[in-house]
Image 1 (tube, rainbow, N blue to C red):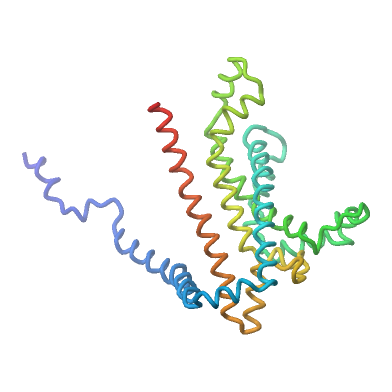
Image 2: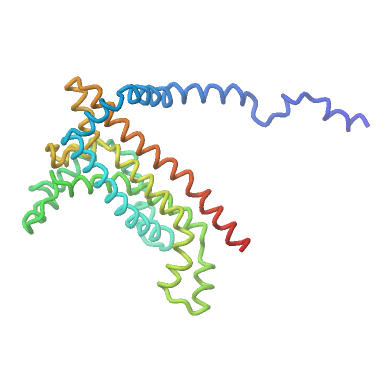
Length: 288
């Protein structure tokens, strides 16, 4: 009887699996608030203080509109390219075994570890007029460096790992059983890809696309070297923020930064909503 009563007499605090969890959570949230949330809040407050006239004055600048158009269009194209290329790379890494596979798997994460300035200098050296690839491209009448094409290539370089790493674990968990079942029922490879594999990969593909787009939209270091930074041609929005700050046009810099922040926030909302949306759809299909 005594042994049955003893567990109930132990204080609840001593039975917690993680001692000090409350203190750790408090310190973590405080650090997150100071380092991340507070600067973002300050930017939002300053942006709201511009008023309608300040916003219109900053956004209606033709140079700002050209930079924003280039950043959004290049980021969209780069995210789409990274989505397709990342899906193929993830498929190869998961479904095939070949010499050097682990090296290729490690190289996927290279843009995460490589400083962005180093990546920009390396890409410029490769695709410039006297570079390894650029000399042949210009001989064929196709210029890469200091054009929007070079910007897209740089953004694909930094966005590809997001597409690969979001699709790869889903492919590993998917296995071969569903493909083999579809093949046994007479489905072709294209039909199996379209009806079996892609529906399972779609949430991961959309997440990888959103991550790549958000990352590309705010990229600075790897782009400015290969872009050429020519106003109305190859000048990206993050660079224009720096230029506005150097010109002491703080309102203009805040307006551009707030737009990029809002776009990145929408991407983050989409990333968090995609799994819930597909989970709800699958539940509805099972009920139906």
